[in-house]
Image (tube, rainbow, N blue to C red; front, side, top):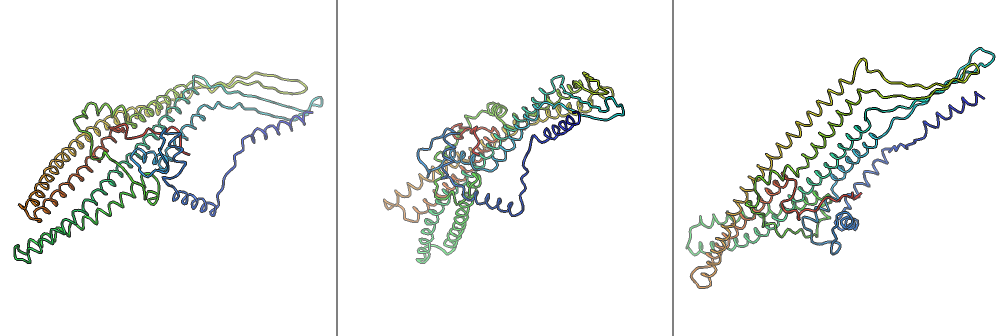
Length: 470
């Protein structure tokens, strides 16, 4: 009977050890290559026309497109598409899932242990020996709660990192949109200016042949035309580069963005710096910056780690009954065990945890200081860029007035065509300066929003959807 009991115990041990079975996925080289090829193909197939993108925008972001597929895309819609496609978002979500899973690990209770033993002795009355011990560990001083709290704070930091990644993605999309929209406008303006400059050169050549002007005047105009054509070719190349940058910021191939109209109707209407007070900007930066919130969550995690290490000064208890069969007698015992904190009381880990908490506190203070400095710097840059834009607007207005006057003089016979074309060219030069000033002020506004990690116009950026697309 005892031999049968011993065999049953061995089988029980084997069964307990084999309860959790995980399949190990081993990919051979051909399989790995096939997986990489299929993933590359899936990336190339990404498109803004994807019906799953529309479903995700509706169910997770609360945005209901009027029709599908969309032909016109604004910054808000492109930002949502980037949240859906950009691989950086997938990485951030995966890392956040790791942090969330750590809460499960922290909440696990220690498993009880069981020991079986058997033996044989020379006593004829009962030669068999059998021993059975069961030990139930009991954590004391709230260690499990502190462990869970630390994991929860780190999980919160991971979720904040997802939001920080989303903001970085939005920032890249915005900057790419600024460059693309203004590059298109600049290329169109340069094409118009090239045509005007060509007419201007033709008129000068005609006057030179008539002996009315010297050759250097014609040569200077031709040099200007050559430089203008070079600028046009550069601008056309920048349009293609900026278009690819928008696609890359979204996370789709450049070919998938072709045929789509990228609109930003209010790009030339940045907010007046007078509405952006420095104290309010600093307060908004401290309140909204995600790195401050992440540093605070990491400080809370360090505090929970210190509490955990302090609790570990108190030993855990191991409680368990024991049973033995010896010489025909049944022996039952109750055991109570604990590690005696005689040689150390966890001083080393406590000191490390205290140092880590202090480092987290210093990091939090440093982050807040950096945030304030960044917001002040970004606001100053925006003020300077807006001043340049205001001057460019005044120059554009004056040049437009001069153009209208020259055209009126041309109609009344008080000026010739050369004067009118010259006024047109001056107006287009002023418009180029205005477009370049708009680009700089919009990029400066983007830097200011990055310092706040919040849009100056909240309606321009959709909230980060809570539900992951995949």
